Length: 91
Image (cartoon, rainbow, N blue to C red; front, side, top):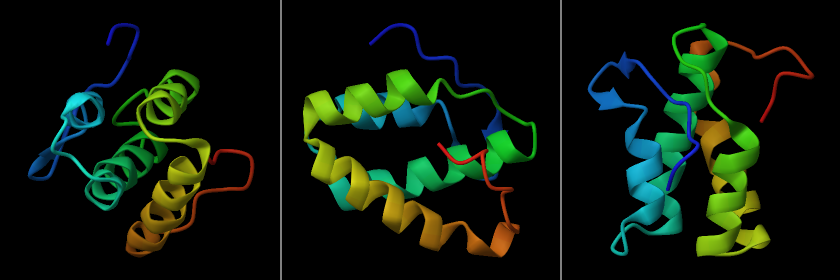
């Protein structure tokens, strides 16, 4: 997958692993939510730049739009302790 712009190591999870997790045939939808949550937090804290359009398109291509919605819902629940992300900045 090319075209992803994701950088920065956030805690124990490198948010660049989001791209690799999408491509990993053993990665399940519920597994990906954690990577997605870290990417949201890292981008909000200006520690990463994520091309959400390409990321979301890759998820839809691998699974489905319904799976993307499940991933987003789970990721937003996971990222709550990091503080609110202003409306309009959500991927």
